[in-house]
Image (cartoon, rainbow, N blue to C red):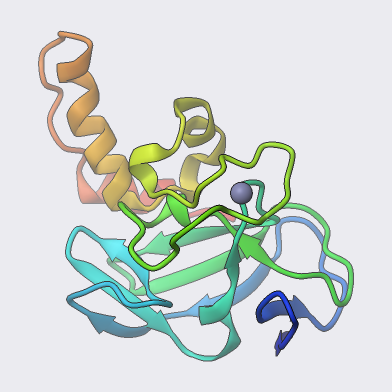
Length: 174
Ligand SMILES: [Zn+2]
């Protein structure tokens, strides 16, 4: 379904066929590593994943057409279409929805979208309204960090870490 195409402005991953909104474009897992690499996806506080095949090379956009759903307990990573995709269209994801910080994307973001943030940043630089809009497409470990920090930031009692069962439920429906 996915194909890696080389281009002058870099390689892109495209879909070979039209895909309706809300579809699972890719599903699988990969090789778990203890460190970040050029093409890894961060799936937990200290775990990074290199996906197999073309999916590993999907580029960043600040206004992506796909979302990444990580079910780390089940060891399943899914890439969902956020809108309908035409055959031959490039797939994009927002790296800030799963990377705490970005190490291998120096310089300006070239996604060209109206809402481009200028640089490819990690979750730390993702505005609150975007975090809310992505919802379940924010990696569970990042939601844990956010929920752990927020009560302190607003001066309320610490609510504690979410239970892993709750997190699994958040990502349970497509
Ligand atoms: Zn951008």
